[in-house]
Image 1 (tube, one colour):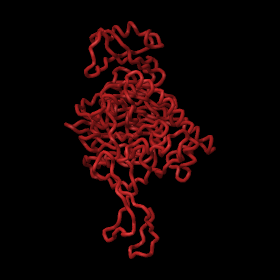
Image 2 (image 1 turned 60 degrees about the vertical axis):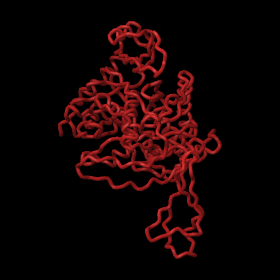
Image 3 (image 1 turned 60 degrees about the horizontal axis):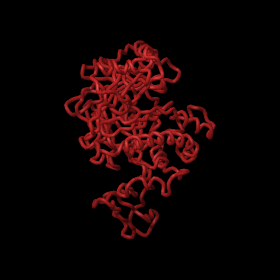
Image 4 (image 1 turned 120 degrees about the horizontal axis):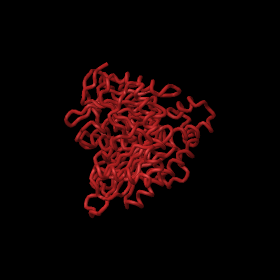
Length: 503
């Protein structure tokens, strides 16, 4: 097993469905993914699964960050007098019964002042992020890790790791982001984590116990199939996609209602529009999930690809399995980022030109409001043992805002539950959704992001003169953004062109 240097940090995400681990190493203005492994828990002992995943990682972890989440973890934003670090901790400990439902002797407490809004008038009080975790819950998690030979340096909270990953690996904040917020939603198996951020500030966090399991239950009630078959149907529905969406719609609507309540609170409390939704987690890979939630929430929804800003080493792990499970690794990557001491941010944005929203259930990038299209065949990935950059993506959508490195120390682990994803399923357009605005999701994205059908001809072929085509130009740009071909009759025998394959 290769030895991990002191500059290599392992992020270990232990969920109820699977264990994920990543090893990151920073080098100047780039980050390399040195190792990656994951495994389902099923009915196995969690400690044993952690041990196997760490072994598969191929790096002996010297520095490990893990996390906790769930009902034993309390996260609050509170207002306190302006105090120094030591005074703040003493004040929070003394006032703990005001903020948490447990006795102070039952919990581990930490707190961190939040950055103030630029230009805001200085007041006698300050906003503080408080985290409290039950000691027994922390100890149970540490016992699992100890049995696997792992001693964490820091115990974080899932929702902060989610925020850190997006700040580091997401796109740079757009110029008009001072009055707009981004909702990060990690949809796992048993719960969904919500973090609403604006610039480098976490405005709101919440856990919702509606996620992949509820979607599976809704599908099972219609399909009447065993649980293992439901997971297969969810990720590769084929011709059953329309029926699957109909069956799962009640669960999606329940989840969207909870998400909308969070939006209402933030928009009322902070006078801030939640303009963009970014999905992560295993259930974010379900076919058309971004389109479905985008229609219900009436907002652009993207599936996040946290690997877009990283350098990869194809000789050290299964590069195709890694890419297929990219959204599942967001929390693990955010954990490793906690102590990576990496000064750069927004690696997935303009600095690398490698950030793109992903299409739910596949590898291609997509956004809500763009008609679902078959994903192009992926380019073959290099296999030599050299560090490579991911190829630049197509710029399909405006970049959502990034987020802040506000992780809280001294709190223990238990992350988001995430199904592993098989090969990319067909990307089909879902039927119109009940309660969706007229015109579906096409109203969400500006015209310049609408796409048409792109037909690629061989070098010795020419487009028939009789065929009609048009270029669509966005209302705010002079460059054409797509090419749409209409009335293309491939069975037309009146030309000398060879018959084209079906698209």
